[in-house]
Amino acid sequence: MSQQGPILIVSNGNRSPFADAIAQLKIFPLVESVWADAGDAVARLHPAAILAGYLDANGPALEKLGRQVSAVKPYTPLIALDPKSALPANIIPFAQSGDDTRRLIARLKAALRVRTEHATLLRRMTEPAARSIPQGDPLHDAMSLLIGRGGSFPTLSVALGQQMGVVGALSIEAAAKHLNARDLDGIVIGEGFSGRVVDAFLTVLSEDARFRNLPVLMAPTGVVGSSYDLPNLEICDADMLAQFAAPLIRQHAFEARIQRALKSIDAGGLLDARTGLLTSQAFARDLSAAIAENLERGAGFTLARIAFGQSSERMQFDAARVIGRLMRRMDFATLEDSGNILIVFAETGLRNAQLVARRFTSVLKHTLTSPDSAQRFEANVTLAALTAGDTADAMLSRLDQDAQRAAS
Image 1 (cartoon, rainbow, N blue to C red):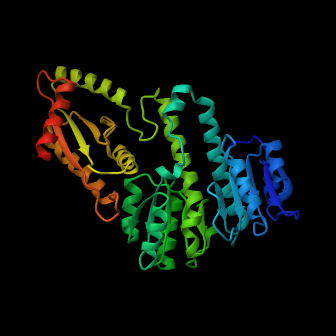
Image 2: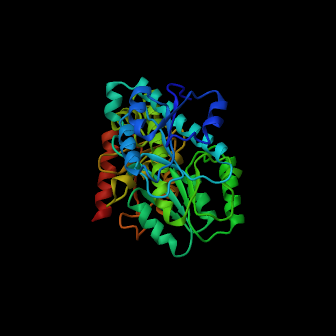
Image 3: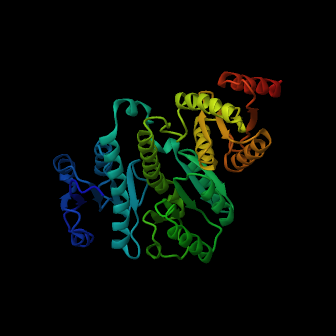
């Protein structure tokens, strides 16, 4: 956890009720500032995180502070206490209820972990790595899970879909399948579920380390947020779900981007920092080596291409990440410039490769939606089995010919 810089608390001059609790932790130096001096305090102290309170009369000052902090590196979390309206893009909401101190400290620690990871990336990043890391708003790469029924579901789907990718689930069981099949950056729980069902779902999330740090946003259902080990659980009014979801999901998507970039650096730049699959150059090299090895050993070997037709860039990257989770360790893949995915099924004959590819496309069709959000995402597969004397170019050429025949 990053310990550089203090925690800055911005208020109207009254001592924050959280100041003593944070000070007692003895791991965060603490500095308090009034709103008029907040900008100068950030520039002078370089805080590790900022807590902003008394927002009602300080909206313009909060927006200005948000713009200032967004330009700071490494990432500096700015948490707004008890917001009553939509927040600027990079400001994390914290609605006060129940055991506020424990919840706030958990939220703060989770945000500081992202800061530490970003500082690590900045320290390790070389010039070639910097060129390969995606830039721009992390929310463009984010994927959220919307769970709900009833009239609010379409409204929430549209509100979230204008900002990020959304996959919907009408039941908790369907939601669980999505959680296990793909990388998600947040969960929004709409109406249609009893408090008992929501409690069981939140308990499962809090007990699984894979999901514990996911942002979870929901309208009040009678559950108490402090009952769960979910630092990014936010309970707010139903009409604020989409607005409060965006900053929390953006932070998680930013963390996921950092982690993929670090894995790419660990792999010597052979992994694409956006998909987690091999870069096209690394794939071409490994494909040629694998063909030569399998021809010598006489083992089965199949090359597959999954084509998505008309699809958005976001969906192509999302599909690549889903496939990355489904593949065996012995297989490898890349996302082509065309948006299609090439996969090598090592030591796998054509028949078994067809079965595996069919499973992949089934998962994709049930988890990805088409650009108009009205039709299922379609995926078409062509396969080429290794034959005597094959080269990488020969196998790729057969895939191209099969694709052309299928299209005619």
